[in-house]
Image 1: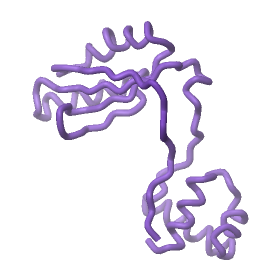
Image 2: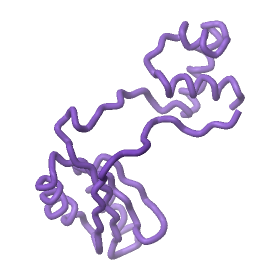
Image 3: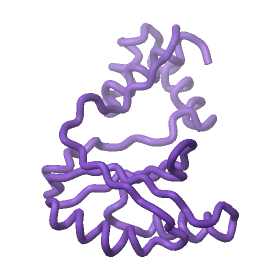
Image 4: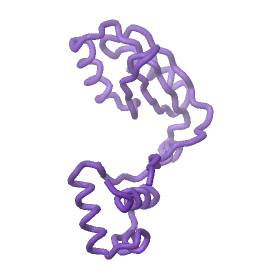
Length: 152
């Protein structure tokens, strides 16, 4: 990946809906050369897709929480059922396998605190292999976004 590829990625992260002509103008290449590079970045898996960034509040989700999860068993027989159940759970929007105090950190959205309690006590507490969980309610989002640090 060269500096031009990084400029393409940076521009697409800012506006993934821009036309190829606009992108080409932004990075200083011809439209055909730009399209060729974008398609290569897609083929190579560097660009995994394009998506809309939706405000959770507009969908009725006024509460976000991070849930630290510790499993009882740290073997494939404990991990695989847990991960399958997480993928099927609607209230869990992200799941990260981590090191440290927890095995996983879940990002959860809920309509309100009562709904978060329902999710915690029902859906999350029922996850297979769960040993311990700790819920942190998000008070405000200081920084979020699709922008990745990229060196020139």
